[in-house]
Image (cartoon, rainbow, N blue to C red; front, side, top):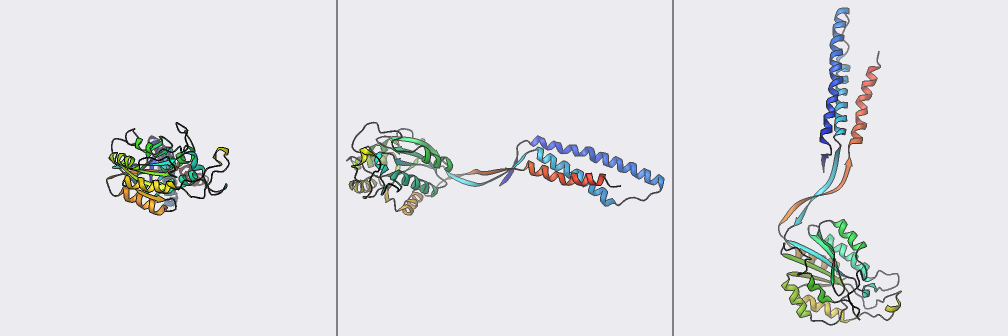
Amino acid sequence: MHVSLLTPAGAAVALVALVPLAALVLTELRARQVRRVLGLGAPPRRLGSLLALSLAAAGVLVGAAAAQPVLERGATRHERTDVNAYVVLDSTRSMLAAATPRSANRIARSRALALELRAAVPDLKVGVASVTDRVLPHLFPTMNEDIYAATLQYSVGIERPPPSRRRQNATDLNALAQLGPQGFFPATPERRIVVVLSDFETDPFSTAKLGTLLRRQRLELILVHVWDPEERIFGGLGDAGYRPSPRSLETVEQLAAAAAGRAFAETELEQAQAAFRAALGEGPAKALWQERSRTELAPWLSLAALVPLGFVLWRRNLP
């Protein structure tokens, strides 16, 4: 928490208080001469001192208000400089599957899991991407958790965009190999973590070949299987015959083994978070100031200035 001034030069307004203070001094000197001539006693010094302090305080408060101070609340966060990450969500139509028409479907559960996984690594820059038969970046790695959450909510959706070609299983996990060479990650830092949230229902492919490609691209893989064998797709005429593919269980385990990664069921959130944190590990970091809220202090200072000004006016009306 710290205070910054939007218009520091405005503090010069406090110098205006010198004018009434000078007038007060001159008036007091003249009053002393008059009392000496008339043989009158001096009034209590306390009232005169309070009057001078009130004028000074009013000037200082008005000058401080003119400088427009702002109270900024936040925290110092640390950003890892040696690693970036992406959370990749499957956005094909099979991710509409749910246990009942009113249950959360796979894409909704994936968004919720993505938020929880992001919260496990607050000092890591994380981006968002979606995968069908190609990978699309929605958000490049960032420390801003609000933008991350908004991207998940408003940008990631079923077939946004649609796959480039129609086929039985629109998910093509071979597209994950695009993450390395197509500029998703900056040239530095060297380490790259990829978390994939998918039902892993895809046409057969060589998990060994894809795993080798991902390892060569230095992609550290964490796979989360968002799937249940009893789920169906409700409300779509073309999806009425959909049935979950048990082969996806084998696919996710084989790909994790081939890519030297880790695989988890969606019910193993805590284990997936621990694996994410473990993959991050220890490394160099830089301190960041993240602003949480701003409070303008000028109105309060102006209001406070009314107290000494009120005393000045009250003193003026004394006999």
